[in-house]
Length: 301
Image (cartoon, rainbow, N blue to C red):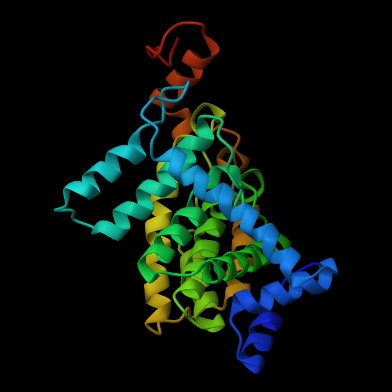
């Protein structure tokens, strides 16, 4: 079954007085023809992998083989522990955790693509931090993850979740939308609020380039995970306060599809434009092709 619209799920949730996550669990039970217990058990296993990727990621101190990432999650957590932050403890925690997962991915750790490996830090970091703030139960966390999965399904069916097809809006944009919906669900928000959160964050990523340096999922990907995890938290608060997206979620996804088709291939994960073709970006590419140390070579050579 192709899930290409959020509207039937929203209508059902409102008619039955249920959350987005609850409706999605029922949907999975129906299409998979298995028990609710089995569906929830599968999501619990996914969550366990996410939690491990956070815990391992924030411990990393070594640079990745490329030298472009590694150790930044720990730096940020250390800053949070010292206090006197400009953005606040929760924002630094969610940012560091998202960066940690992305750095764990760069070090060949096991992560959950949500929806992709390049955007794998946002959902676990936001769900973990929101659950921490709200003192959420495992049941609430799992419902949040199911709410996020529905957002991802609609984006994938209606547009894409591939950077090579639609640029980074389809990766980090979708992951932030998924995360924002999950945060609202965990915080006790309505289905409408969760969907509004997804729409608010996704429409503010439209047109985002996918221009990874040297073709690796590190620059700008790792830090972008951290930044958009923070955005997802703020957007969740916006939706929970009653702020709505003027453009409905389905329409935002359709706009992402249209813009994705307009984007030139040079900024759709080909590393043929943007940051990847700056002098420094090309220098990393040259170095990676060589057998030398980590000293950057001149991009003109």
